[in-house]
Structure formats: C-alpha cells, structure tokens
Length: 71
Image (cartoon, rainbow, N blue to C red; front, side):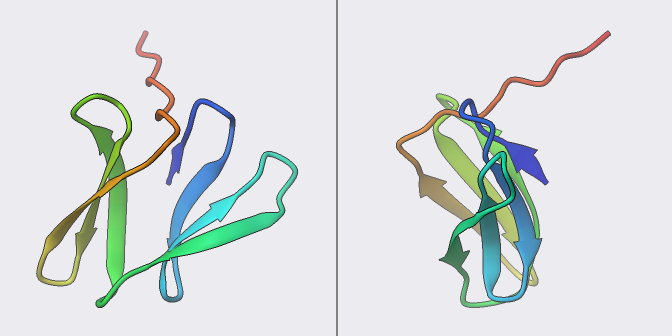
C-alpha cells in the first residue's frame, strides 16, 4: 500500500492496483494481467513499480508518490 502526494492510496486488490481518494472514494483500478502483490514509488517519484506473480511492472503516473518519513 502506498500514498501519493495528493493523499490518494494505492493498494493491491482484485484486478490490480486500486486507487482511493483520501475520503475513501474508489477513483479507479490499474488493471494487471496477473495478481499484483505490492507496489512502490521509484525513479523520479512519478513511476509506480508493481510486483506480481511472475513479473515486475512499471507505470508512469501524472502525480508523484509521497516520500516516506524515516525517524
């Protein structure tokens, strides 16, 4: 599960990566050809990497991912 800079949540679920607004509204699904296991931001912060059953996918998005806060 990951969050973008607008507060939208990206979570694995049926059919791929489900995207929810901060209020919980389902904004859409990034459809996958196989079961998605996890996702994470990479490269310039606007690339979402998705691990799946037998592959790793890369999706370029218009919004940047939220940078993690480490102690």
